[in-house]
Image (cartoon, rainbow, N blue to C red; front, side, top):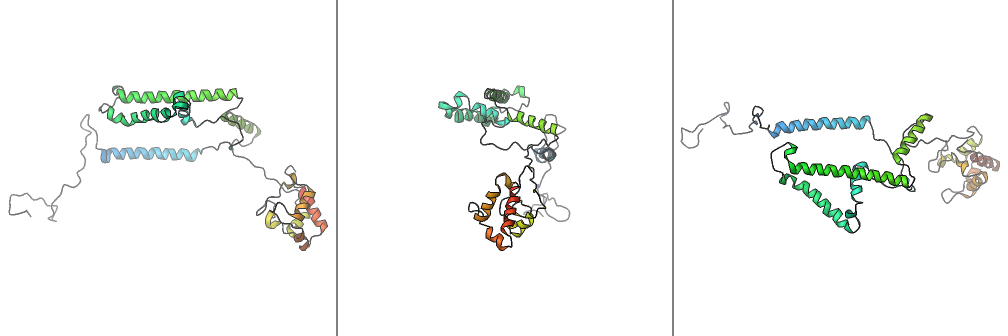
Length: 291
């Protein structure tokens, strides 16, 4: 119904609800029929951008799953190497070595030059306000882009060239060359070419020796496990590489560095004789990695 007593007021109803129709959400116009016009940002353009982003994300996930990143060589703190960052930071690495970015000009190099560079990027949208989309008709934006690309390429190439020269002067072999040579050597021997360390398990020497039963009877398995791989105590596989029979007997009778208590009385109380303990020490001394 109309406000006040004005019969000329036009009233629009929605169906039979007698509720006035508001403006509501108006679908955006289709600009495709008008040359030079663009489509509506929401939802048309935004939906297209979202779909492209999904396709790119799925592609990246497929690549990361199918080709996992290789493990590098274990870090060696004692190695004398010339440190160098990853390739995408080489231009910054080289820039920080320039005379006006280090030494007495460190403030200028870290704050002044970088402030101008990033300030130019921040001011670019305000300096170049034209509607032209062709790069050769946008001199300011195009100049900043080509200048940045040229600087990055130049500094990256210079950093890598100088690094190779320094490596050659000091007689060092680059890590990528070492990796390739190691992979080729392993491939020729039929070994894995990955960089992960391949540890060889040390076998038990004379596993059927009666000393094995004495080892278990004395209660040594509580710390060193029945397979000699260790648990609460260290592994005894290969113990003969560092300890002889007499040293092992001393450890059984006197303990070891306050980490292992004397086990002689425990073994005697378990029913072992001095001859059994002597044979046990002799058997443990035979546990060598080269056997």
